[in-house]
Image (tube, rainbow, N blue to C red; front, side, top):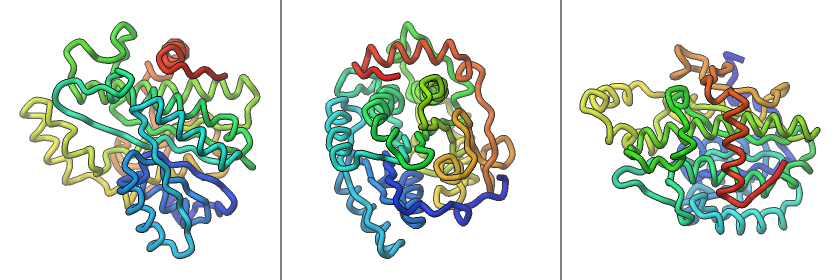
Length: 309
């Protein structure tokens, strides 16, 4: 596994893959590699103009590829429902759902169209609703259909306050981001428990990119202290490229034979920060606790109105 790279991706002919946030960064790399290996890829993007540019880039990189662009704003439950309705009408069976889209917004506490704190609303609640609305189609996938949620190494340092899930008290963007990634991780593990209990063929798997350059990184530390900002500028010079190794863990989680539900993958290098391959990643204790997953699931159902499993 440590030496795994994109050349090891099995043939994906006949598989339907949905990648959220596929217009740039890790999502674009992931969508490109899935298309390169034969999958029909749906680029689920908030900005369809950027999505069409990504589609054209994939076509240029992979002659014969036919990615499709669909509008999806994970910060709007109405958009999530509309996307799911249209997608399942066209693709009654889906093989891969890669919940990749991410945001990091600074300044005053940003909110979604439904009044959720933006990071929690986009990363966790939007993807929670999307997964539930697509689950029947995923269950119709031909062979080992998978949901891949994208975590972060920062989830290990976060804590979920169920009395303040929306981080309304002393909001800081970096901390809200970390909390949302903890929620994503707990969701992915709880989804695995529930899928197995229901006897579903769908696998719920997790991955993180380590510290990978993306359009989020330059902003990630701007709301933190001076020392952290200086450290971040140095670290950014050392980060791996999403087109190099950053996307490998989520591609492995999505395609590698023998992957089991509930597994968590990250870069194979020192402390999972970067690496030329993939290894199983370390989970934070709070994310791994079944009680966290159950409590978060109940909250997500109440907040989104989407119930499943």
